[in-house]
Length: 331
Ligand SMILES: [Mn+2]
View 1 (spheres, rainbow, N blue to C red):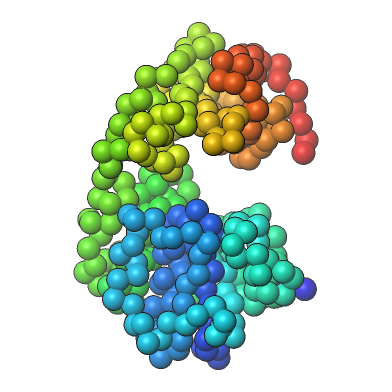
View 2: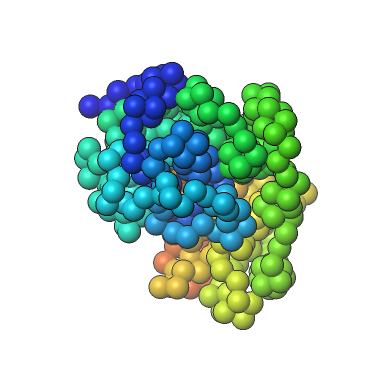
């Protein structure tokens, strides 16, 4: 049984609780981390004990969210009496390290913006129209009567900037700018967050990009482009697969290209394929052929074949997709 709550009810519920454990999803992004730490800081400001728990460490670009936390108010997972999940659409996304919170009834409250939320929590504040979970957290924290200081502001900003691609993606709302305008009144340092999140590259990352870009390869009369990232490139550059996040967009954003794909080699073999397409091509239909799926403009799948074979299979599918002869799967 899942109760749908309003912002006011959610704020009221949190005000009545103490010893609150906040969960973020695995491979954390700025929105789940920003939501978690903003809420945690707001609860600390009210004198409540609270902590954030995530299966993975906070990525180094985002570690500022945890600076100067009130350690006396932090708690261990065992001390928790109330569990809140933020920006987590499905319990599976918590990661196997947090399997105990994936049992039915383990999560008391979920605050999320994914339309695909599986309603696993007892109480749910789901606002699928919001560009970022941090936009919902802004409302909840304000409704709790907490005054938003610079530390909370930078957490909320991190989430909104992350999920809107620094206010460039089509999901960016006037409300995103309105909230950020309020946050900026606190005088927090937004420039350094933008710099760390959207501009700064490590040398290893640059080296990996250089190696990967050498594999850039066009097909279908220049209407499709592919880039491969192999395990060898990772070890040669000292980078990780997270460091090539932007490269799929690079292939798709080339002039005249309607299908951009990256082939990322897995340590256990085979390739994880990410496909991005223009309006005229269905990325999920391309990936469905290989047992994958996702969104209409951005999808993924797995191909358990050597690189050359994987490229050949993709080329065939891309040609069919561009010709409009791809079979359409309904699920
Ligand atoms: Mn999000």
